[in-house]
Length: 199
Image (cartoon, rainbow, N blue to C red; front, side, top):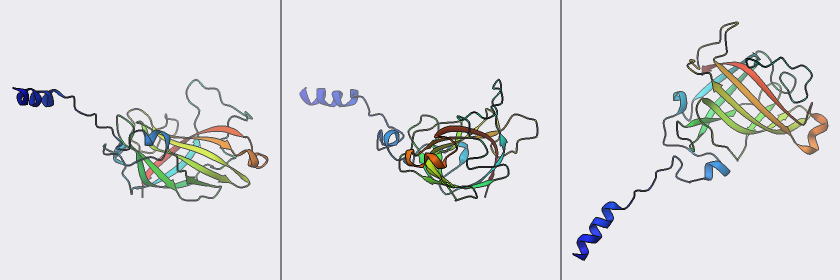
């Protein structure tokens, strides 16, 4: 009777939860990890994407900002027509929707975004997301670069003139304390309309 009770106890024991990242909370506090989830928008590790900057993005209901030091659109690093080359090297697995690609960006005319060791969790509708060490001329600091797809949009369809953007890029910049004299501002945000294409 005792052995039967033991077998029953094993059957009723709750199963372990399978977290998207086997390393537990590592993806929250440290580097991102490769997830077993399906990749967001079918963008996988090894994929290369061209991110073309089209213009400044002003969300609906937001008045255009001019001269606000918290806004750094064109003038810090990116500019209209710039093509950023992104290569997906890992994914953020600590989400409950899909695995968000984390890319490296090739150096570009205007600066560089070097992938940081510490990555934050991300989720859909991000198609690309990452934390970077930024250098732009005499300015240096940290940048979070997030590329987001509008609801229902095709991420690889170019945005038509006058239409709401299919894809936007948000760059949050925080300048290093010792490099502030070379930066237009210590901390700022830039939002841009971008077009994506697979390479």
